[in-house]
Length: 345
Image (cartoon, rainbow, N blue to C red; front, side, top):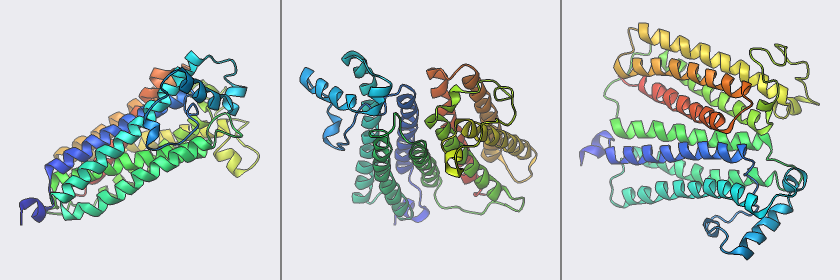
């Protein structure tokens, strides 16, 4: 039996997974730009295969534009938009969807090839199969999200945006984790987790992911465009208009509420990350890469929080907002690497 079958290690598989993770990362960033430019509803049809071809010719462009003109977003927000202006938002959304299709091809084709050539470590087959299914589900969730903004809303439903982003970031994290598994193979020993590093790292990873979901709710409610002072919110620590008409209207649809929640969890993430960094530097258990990742978590969280504040007080300019979303994915990736690494001797 070949060595990769014996120890569950395959560097080619690891590189393939990392390349896919980088494409997912790019898709998250471009998806953020698509939302920020108001482009997400410009393509009103879901054609998984033929949709890869953009409108060809004047007649096709006018047909696509007419479909968009029937949406509430056009009638209430972009009425009077020219065909040339429509081109701009169309290309953002088309690029986002094209990248999604590319991610699917880049994952599925090598996966099948590895299976046919019997170069996939058996212990990773079921994991990669699940990732393939989740990737397909992500396409459905994306359309489900877009559909929410085509009839009665001028933008997509914030909770659907959060689910869409949350699934993308879960896939990103799972790809990083599985790539590390493929690169290193089966554990030859067990990390000393008597000091609680394993549960702490996993809880922190979950906290970062949850904070990303709150960020999606902020984006979906355009909550970054209100209360643009810091550390207070329009002069208040707790916004007086926090509550909505009910529980769900508050936690998912109240702009002051989702911004406040995002701020509070951000503080928790920074405190936890700095604590992890400090404990990592002084730990007798963490060595080498684990200690470096613990320090990286603290640095990345502080920089991400600072960038969030700057983005808020400058009224969410597109470059900073995209950088902030990228920073969230980077922090999640580092937290994933730390959670995986402390499980190993």
